[in-house]
Image (cartoon, rainbow over all chains, first blue to last red):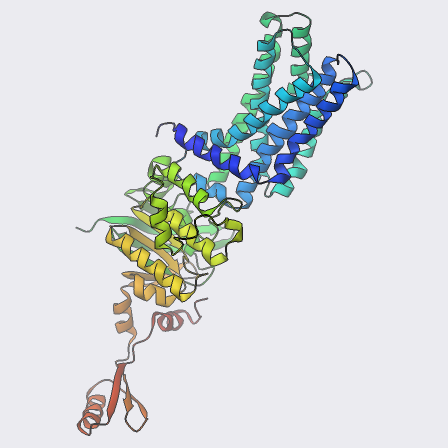
Length: 237
Length: 283
């Protein structure tokens, strides 16, 4: 069966309508926006770490949390089974379901950047980094949504993710004291900060591609695990 | 030769140490309404899950559309069948129309079909109602409407009218007859014996994971009938006459004397037969 954009858009439109009536989930995009507005008034020019504290929080609160809540609710209400039994393929279901969180993430990050007056030296490279990051955080949200049984459970199990990836840059300050934490430098949020710092210092693709590569590996591994988990959930024990 | 939509041979499913199905055999012919009857926990839903590729059998064979049932999990087969189970979910915050519109787009069915299926389930004027405001029975009718949308070749219905009042059940039954006239095969699980009697061409009694009986409802009633007659006389007495020459002679005498108001065969219902077979009620 071929890929059907009509089916993807049907799921996207349904989710958009559904989310617009779900205040519990849709208000989660406010936190990074409020933080961006506060930061934007604190100084004329913020540090890269400050910009990316807000941007990484936007990734976890919109891409990951909203995606996780959307999937968990489909499971809780037994509507995911209806989609699985329809002619929609796995790729169509998850493309449709990811489009809403992807769009909201894009809007949240753009508005946050405007509030903070963040102007990257090379907007294309930073945008590529952010798109790869968004895909990773969406895959992570999907995975946790599949593992959670209810929306409430999803909002609890997602907390460590929000802390690790949203406030991960705080870990960096502890690396001198606890050297084993240096592995945190390979986290996708830290890689995005490194990429943005280099871009701001005038580096080009040749200097930042390892960061893009590491982020892509994070996305591919998470997407693979998500597909394996979905396939297991598709058929009952 | 009759085309078979479902073929099941020696099917078994064990959950942990608990057998849910044991050595189950049956076939469902194209265009027939096949009733799978049994009390809660007898293995009806497990069978539907195996036949729709949602569950893997422990042993045995299950074929649907001449393909192993596990393949029904593939998107190319999903347009050919529909499923309604008691846990088929709806999107609570959306209207009935929006719920059905999603599935119109997924099955590539024109949106005008929404009106038709809502009429079939007696919800023609309720399109704009939000699902969270519906009663359990109305939600069940929306689930049925959703399954009717793409006019599937094969429809699996798990207790489709369990939450409905008699008037709405009749409406659904009429809709199901309409579908079978168009060639849809229906695999119906129910513990409503009346529903099974009026809808099913053949029924199978499932108890403790095993099929105890399988035949046409009429033949089963004859098989379990003792041929006795219930006779109401003009003086108000009710007689139970045995079958055979002795009963026939008594009936003849009363008829000669113009004493008979009514005569009824004393055939058991499907429920009576089930109780006789298994020693338990169908609940």
